[in-house]
Amino acid sequence: MTYKVGLLGLGTVGTGTAKILTAPEGRHPLMRELEIAKVGVRSLEKPRAIQFPPSVLTTDFDEIVTHPEIDIVAELIGGVEPARSWILKAIAHGKHIVTANKAVMSRHGDEIFAAANEKGVYVMLEAAVGGGIPVISPLKQALGVNRIKRVTGIVNGTTNYILTRMKNEGADFEAVLADAQKLGYAEADPTADVEGLDAADKIAILASIAFGGRIKLEEVFCEGIRHVTAADIAYAEKLDFVIKLLAIAQEDVTEDPSTDTPQQLALKVHPTLLPKSHPLASVDGVFNAILVEGEPLGQVMFFGPGAGEGATASAVVADMMNIAAILKTETEPIPHPLLSSTHQHYCAIAPIEESVSRFYVRVLSQDSPGVIGSLGTCFGDRGVSLESVVQTGMRDNLAEIVLVTHHVREGNFREALDSISKLDDVKEIPSVIRVW
Ligand code: HSE
Image (cartoon, rainbow, N blue to C red; front, side):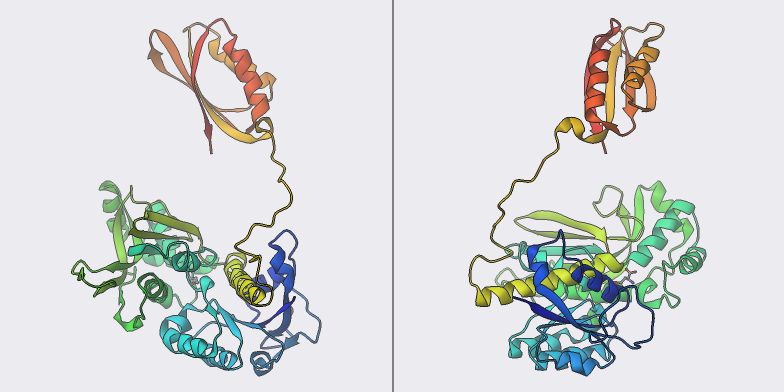
């Protein structure tokens, strides 16, 4: 069975999507059943990173959303209009929709989902929040049994990159923003990112799914990062905090226990001093992360690339694959291609000796001349390169020596360790721990 896909837009995400769809080898077998039928572009003349037969490319988006053979339309043009109109027209023609468009879904999700429900088609939007990070599908499925208490996200890579550089360089906002624009990490017009509007779109979408209700975007409190100074960041550091732009959706504490759903949600985007011990505090640079807290699960965190060609396309194509799986089970009821296990072969597993790792080793030895040299020789003879060697002091009248290796083949490391354990001066090797 083949499921035909029409792409609206061949920009960064569209190109990434086409690259995955045209190279299914090594991916899920269902990928071979997804076929690009049409790709809508603004100009047929523009040079492309990926070539299509002339019959596939078109500037006529109407042809795609009304095409009798297309099953899934991926809206990858972004922005509110004309994206909204194309999505609605595709739905009216019975197409399933995949979109990466947080702006249209946070503003017109109610209208779009209502139309889709009436027509009996799916609208999938995994790529709209957190780029390649799977968070919408886990919230709907694997986490669906939980009562969600709070969703807290670093969902804007641009601001996280700026705040991270401000922290690392002690620099002010404007200087880092200007450099980020030069390097292509921030848009020429950075308003949506630095004012927190992009994060507000995303938390509105997440809140709607996590708390099972519609959200009016204008009700999300939104404060950006323009006013955060280098001095704030320095003080935060002294107090053991980092400053992050957080998007937060949480149950209001005044929740009425007699109802299943919270009466009120707190929905906000603002810079926040976050204790360094908080799971989101170490999410730096352009990365995104979303921490979901629920009952009974507790905390679960999703981390990864929040934007970019391959990452966002990964989420787009995963949605297509999920739709294909549903369509397939309508015609071939079992086994469900995503939920069943049909593997026939065993994966080859490398023996541990062949694996490569860094190691931390603690050695107790006599405090005699030449011990460190002997340790170095034992490692060196097996091609194990040392990153650091420190004699940390005495323990039980023995010298305590801590060594960290560079990446080594584990078999070589073990041979070296074996010869070290036989050295007359070495009394004990109390710790051997792999280092990431
Ligand atoms: N502008 C967004 C960001 C990426 O900086 O994270 C797309 O959602």
